[in-house]
Amino acid sequence: MIVRHALSTLLAAVLVPQVATAAPAATGDEAWTLAWSDGFDGDRLDPSHWTLADDCFGGGNAERQCYTPDARNHSVADGMLTITARAETHTGPAWTADQRTTPEKRAATRTGEYTSARLTTAGHAAWRYGKVQVRAKLPTGQGTWPAIWMLPEGWDYGPWAKSGEIDIMEAVNLGTPCAACAGGVENRVLGTIHFGGEPPRNRYIGTDTPLDGAIDGFHVYEIEWDETGIVWRVDGRLYERREPHEWHTLSSDKSGAPFDRPFHLILNLAIGGHLPEGRNLGGVEKAGFPKTMQVDWVKVWQKRGPADRAAPGNGAAGGKGH
Image 1 (tube, helix red, strand yellow):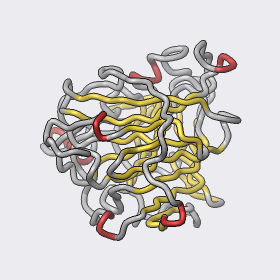
Image 2 (tube, one colour):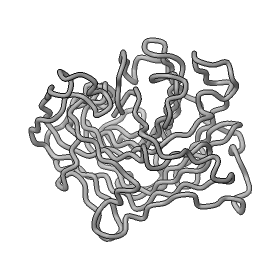
Image 3 (tube, helix red, strand yellow):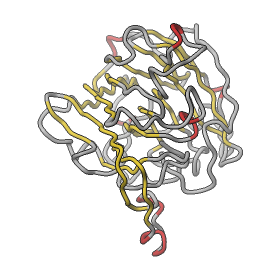
């Protein structure tokens, strides 16, 4: 994720754990239409679908990786996208592309301890409401932070977090010791929304849930989102629901804002940062690299017509980040 203005970490706001028991936001699967998908066929990313980040910004969370467009950090083969994080020193742009607004920022560089990849559909595709599903296999190890998430395409309500953020799935330190987890091993994924104002007036709420089955196997991560709320599922199991009365933006009194605008999709694998380094064993375990996050497919379903798909745009504005 990216930051243009003041920052805060994932730990700076109040998390409200809550297990959902309500019905999904929408029903009637027969009404869903496949609006967009990528099965990662061929031997390279589809440039009409994805843009690769190239920066050592650290996401605003003191993450240790540089994101590169290099083939060493992402590949497409056998119907699979693989994002690879490597333990290697790399020097690159200190700021994300949208933050390079002055000659000094355009010239600034930073060096990271790891390299990885971050893909976004910003400027290519964005959606208001629908069902987003991603089948993925996550890395294990202290300091790993894979994420599947969404940021606003137009930033209509202003910089992060006024325009919101939807985290479909985040996982930190999978497979490491965890006293609160079944079997004593970290096996949880998180679903979260960010909203409110610019830091320090940003807020978030979310829930974590254990993965069923192997933590290093493939699972389907999903949100279903409409004007009545957002629900999160793993492998079809609903574990969280959020409704409009639970969120807000300081930029509008409109019910549903800021999650009533088109959002684009992001896939990335971060290494380190406040959230993973503050949990489990602490820090980043340097052994066991490279680490990989694999994505089998992405599917976006909608019940509405083309009016709910955003026109392509640059998607560039403030946000916080992985």
